[in-house]
Structures are given as structure tokens and as C-alpha cells.
Image 1 (spheres, helix red, strand yellow):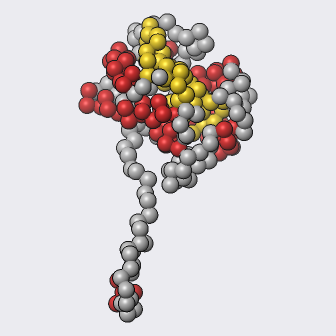
Image 2 (cartoon, rainbow, N blue to C red):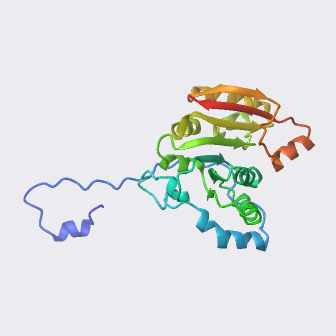
Image 3 (cartoon, rainbow, N blue to C red):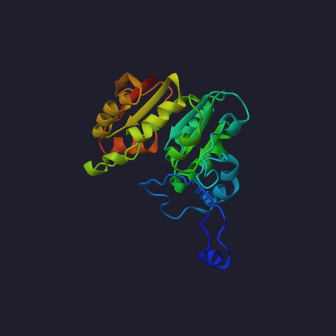
Length: 251
């Protein structure tokens, strides 16, 4: 806290020098690229946001709720000790809800800063009745920053924003800024899946992910056995782009 100069003028100087007060630690500021919101939502989606989101959002993840970035126990998000998976950028939530329903013995955290996508997910959660889910409507880096080491058993990156311009490639998730924290949070031997329809995105994925401590174990145009095709994949197929899938394991 800074001293008011008017107080210094009014009060006598202390007889002995005092150490200046330490500045309050501030969370590191960083860029966020992409949209936070889109077109006007339907009234039902606004209702989902107002009625359901707060109860599904883990407390202490956001930089406003946890400015000191204290480590959280993710088991507290769910109230049990089941394995925890993470989906980064869940889009409209199709795959996330599908995996929650298919694997009821697993807890899954979904991160998505685009609030329209969050609203779509909440509607799907209501329809499916899944309960093994937590939703962080923000930057996945905020979540990984407060998770302990080796707490996640699997991670998904499905059809991420491609940032096609070369000067924007550093904004992609498959950079060390994102991959190193993800690797820290994953249990050794755990799986990291990446799906995209952009050849250059997969090129960067195959280059960057191993550098962060992963081994490539599969790469083909064949999806996983439990895969659910998303709206983004269907759009890619309509427009003539081929899906590409890669599987890595944490070393």
C-alpha cells in the first residue's frame, strides 16, 4: 500500500527507517485471443446460464476468485475420488456430454470461454442428465494454473480454433505455453487426444506436443472407438476437409 503524501507532510518523520511495505502480488496478465460471446442467445439458453452454470463451475479457478493462484484439489469439484479427464474447448458440448454419459465412473472438466457454447452445453447436460461434469467458462490456462501435478487421467483437444494465418500460429493451443502446463497436470502414461481438420494444425501438433513430454502413439484418419463426431467435424466434412486424429501418451 502506498503512503499518502499528505500524511507524510502532517506527521513527524520516524526516528528509525522502516522497510517499505511489500507490494501485493498480482496475477500475471496474459493475452486471450478469440471470442467470448457471439450472436444473441435464445431465452432458454439464457435460462440455462442463469440457473445451472454457477452450480457446475468450480470455485477458486478464476483469477478473480483466486488471485493468489492457490492450488486446488480437483476432487473437491465432484466430491469423489473418480479419475478426472479434461476437455479443452468443448465447442457446443456434444463430445463432452457423450463421454460423461459413456463413462459414468469418470469425472470430466470442460473448459470453454465462448459463452454461447457454454449455454449450448448446459442444455445438453439437462437433456442427458449427466452429473459427472464440471464446467469452467474461461481460459483453460486458468484451470491448469491451479491444478496440482499429475491429477488428470486424460485430456481432449477437439477441433480447436485453427488460427490459419502464419502470424497467428502462436495463438494455437498446441504451443509450449499450453502444452507444458497440461503435461504437468497429466498422470504419466495418460492419454492426450487431438482431432482437427486443418493439416497445418496437425503438423504443428506433431511437432510441438512431443517437445512437451508426450509420445505419439497413433495418427490416422480413423477416429477413436468411443468418438462422437462434433458439429465442427460435420461442417468440415461438408466443406470437403478430412478429419485427422492423433493420440499421445504422457511420458
